[in-house]
Length: 354
Image: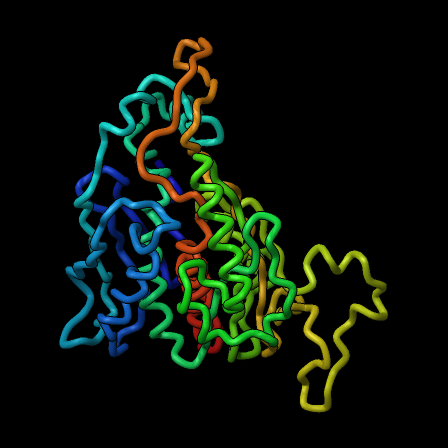
């Protein structure tokens, strides 16, 4: 199976399955001499881990990361950073009912057809548990980036949408509620809605908005390695993501060019930021902001019709521990992938100056 490595200079290769012994990764290309705060790395995993509230999966995993290489006396050595997160709360029997059948909108069918074999326990390699490895790499990338600020938050759950511009929000409120929405009143509405969906044995999707500030000018490589294109690839690689838009996004088609253009100030900044901090694929120093759309979790705790390996129609029911809405736990994952992209492009910018 190919496709397990992301990045050009700052690279993450992840490994492991949802119900295997462990998941983990190897980070290659991280510069030497970075003083790492290991507690910050662990705190990022705490934000992603299951069982943290009543509106997420109740799988109980401590998600403690063990780092095996690449760090000496608290600093990165420039060699590959190897790490693992051991699985401790697997319940593989919860998936025995789908051993010979395929769950709708999951990777079960295509994995079986592509490889002739699949790990049906929690989805194996296609499980969202793999994203814990990304969070570790992203936490290290954040510490390399230093002054760059990355804040992601839930801006929509189902039809409940936060209408405020991100400049009107207090990011310090993001971690104050289970939904991770910076608008407290809206967060309450979203949480109540997710709970009602959970009682129905159903799921709901949502949108995560990410804002990246203090980004230097000049990151991005035209023609095929535009900064926003790499961010799009990073976000679309996350499980359950169905859409990505940056800057004015799809709303920009409603405007005329004369209104959409970002007019310059004398210092090179722009009066508006419909470009989303990127022009010609290169950062212009303004805030980067984008939206990531997540579909409803495919596993619903209801009876459904599907097919088995013989192509016969069968009826089964979703079992196990699953998120009724994935977006609250996906916030640190979006931040992590954004940090990996920025770290990678920061190193590419350095290499171009040599």
